[in-house]
Amino acid sequence: MIAQETTQINELKQQQQQLDQQRSLVKEEREKVQRQERSAQRELTGIRRNIQATTSQIQFTESKLKSATDSLKKLEAELSQAEQGYQQRQSATGARLRFLQRQQESSGWAVLLQSENLNDFLDRRFQLRRIYKADRQILEGLKAEADKLDRQRAQVEQKKNDITLISQQLMAQKAQFEQQAESQKDVVDRLRTNRRALEAAEAQLEKDSQSIGELIQKRIAEENRKRGVIILGTGQFNLPSSGPISSGFGWRMHPILGYQRFHGGLDFAADYGSPILAADRGVVIFAGWYGGFGNTVILDHGNGLTTLYAHAQELYVAEGETVERGKAIAAVGSTGLSTGPHLHFEVRKEGEPVDPVGFL
Image 1 (cartoon, rainbow, N blue to C red):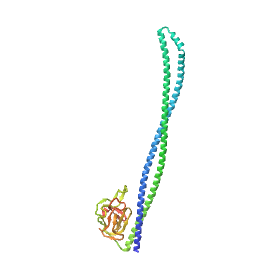
Image 2 (cartoon, rainbow, N blue to C red; image 1 turned 180 degrees about the vertical axis):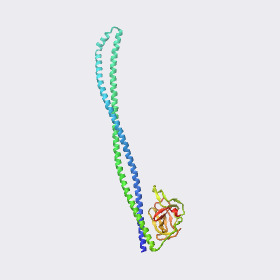
Image 3 (spheres, rainbow, N blue to C red; image 1 turned 90 degrees about the vertical axis):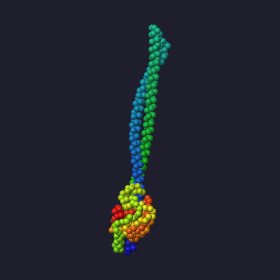
């Protein structure tokens, strides 16, 4: 009967170990998806900022385009008015010049011959030249004004075309950003859905593992009562390793995962193969691979007090053995989730981690 219960306990421990391994894998995947989600969200935020900036540029460009269109309309009206005036004045001036030219030999000379004296003759000739010259200047001025308006109209037309082209390019760019934002939003939504599913799976695995842990403790207590065996340690522990303490109990930045995580024990820096010692007298209730802890030994010291020794290179004990304080139970290694050779040592009261310093 006792052997059967021991087998059941071992089977439950194996189930718990498998659950813990699954939970560790699910957690790693969830953290990976969470990082991808944050990265995708940052990219989506950047795209939306680009859309906002492009929209502002489009509004500014449309304002410039309206201003250029208004200027062009005004110039076209001025040019039309100037052209009408130019044509009228050109027609009148040209007619007068042609008339004077036709009358040059008759009327022109007649005017000059009507001079009373030489001074009057010279004055009349000077006045005729001034008329010819003034008319030519009028025509040249009208032509220069018309040419200037033509150049201004061409410049405004070119400016309007340039602004229209820029506006079209910005609209196309905005459409591209909006398409990117839509695709990126789909990515963020998918990653968020995956993360939530993994969180739910992780929570369920943690709950299942805790339930099995409680069942194991119950079965151990029942087995001990049936055996009539009560193993009591002294409650004052020896150091489990001769190496120095490299990491304390409490919250810390995890050396591998890279984020704040609760450290439920002490780390002792030690060389590969150096002995791991039982902190106190107890019964081996677990000896084997335990998820991220790697090769692990757990001792039951009675009164709800247990110790855990993780990341071992080699185990020297088996489940069910009774060990004395100071006995070598394993060798230091770097198995499981570890960055180098060390001993991870935990003290648990009723299954909850407590600071080992209070027992050493």
